[in-house]
Length: 244
Image 1: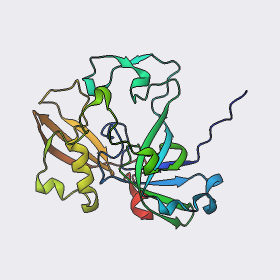
Image 2: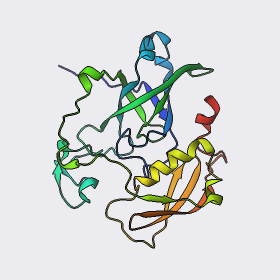
Image 3: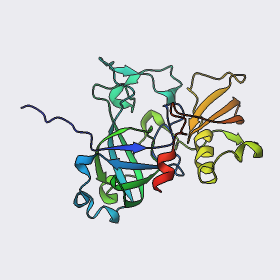
Image 4: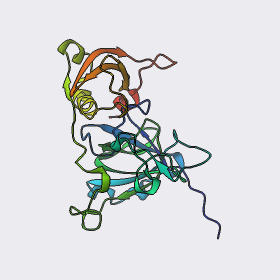
């Protein structure tokens, strides 16, 4: 039996222009806000009838920046320092036979916007700007919540691991509504697990800014904040600011 073709129904607009710094799981940085905009074919408001009664959603999406022609049965999870191999189906690695992701996000609000129809305002998403969405499903607590579930080799709760030192003069360059989210992203250590050089300066693109920082031990220090420009000279992240 031939399978139906998967269709992109929407795209997420977030503050992450690149993969570096995106939280490793959804919900780790609750302060992050993003917007889901449906493709023209799926902007019928009837398709969202009743969704406002749910607090959380499941997003099924595509790892469009990690598509490869082949796959490996084992991968190196960052949680294990990138040194141990686990079966791909025991991980959430993007490098899979089918590059599909699953994220649980908060539904902060929904409303109609000129030119794009009804959009969804999301909290805690772990998605790059422009990520293609295949489906949206409501989170149902009685079926989806399992507090007793075992976490396998992942352990822990994914909480903050670094103390963030943010000089006041640099923090002033970050829009007030983005400051808590940026702190949360930095506190969860966006570096690859195998990079531990305290002299290395990292650059994170976030909300139209280039955030430069260093890490020594358990302390992250922000060193510079620069405005990031697109090719057209417009800061990234303006879409979010315009429609909300």
